[in-house]
Length: 344
Figure 1 (cartoon, rainbow, N blue to C red):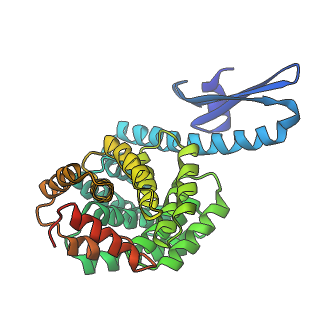
Figure 2: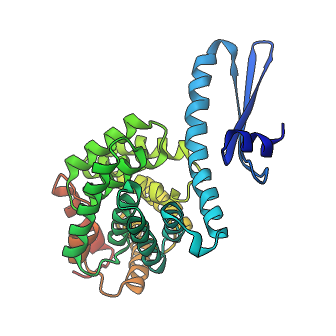
Figure 3: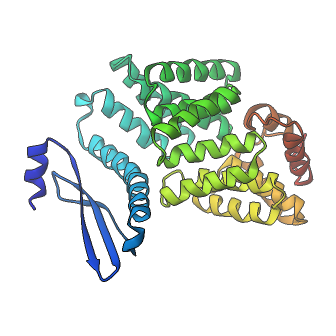
């Protein structure tokens, strides 16, 4: 098959091809995602099972393919946007440039992403995903402790998230980003959860939605459900650029479930991916404090204060933590951070 010709005939940039093979009572399904213009392979996998379980296998293939290729497509489009001259960028390419900057997970990258996303809105005032992306940038600023004007940024995040939902009622990505932002930044937990539930109905195979919903379950005081949601997100996208976000979410869920060793283990995984993550360092320090690892807790707290010298328990409670439904949860977190040596 000439993928370049097929791509031209169908008018598409990417092709998903596959094959089915049968031997005795076994069946094997293979699939691969290809960039039509270059013929480059972006993703490939295979699935095997008994022929009598063919319907279950079909569901597994569907979930895995959708979950796996979505981040590959986004990354491929980001790379394509980078190769185009800046003066030729349209709103979509501005969005992709913003996503590339956003995924640096740095303050500078966040600033760059905000500029690109606002540019996308300027180019297309009805671009729902651009509104949701700016809102998510502000959520990232809260999570990493980069907020400058809290009142203004919270109001802006809420405005943008609401506008995104208004424009993209049937877009799972928009609903997921906006729902998470409303829950985390403007502390509209019920509305945020409702939009995330709608996103799951639109696309049940979105790793991002499962991850964001996991965080909401943490804040709602349902840690066991949160652990399941994060596990589903990681099954759908095991090498996701935001894997550390899922891992530190799992750490928080275990922490509030009373599984402090498991919480520390997941926090360490997240810190291997993103060593300077505020949330990862905080939950690791808190978990160490409650497992009697005082020296390690102090080291983690020292690293937090090295990154953010002004950090205090009061500022964590006010600016960084999510909207916990049960007051004993942030109180427990604060007590653990206090034991870890974080100043009041």
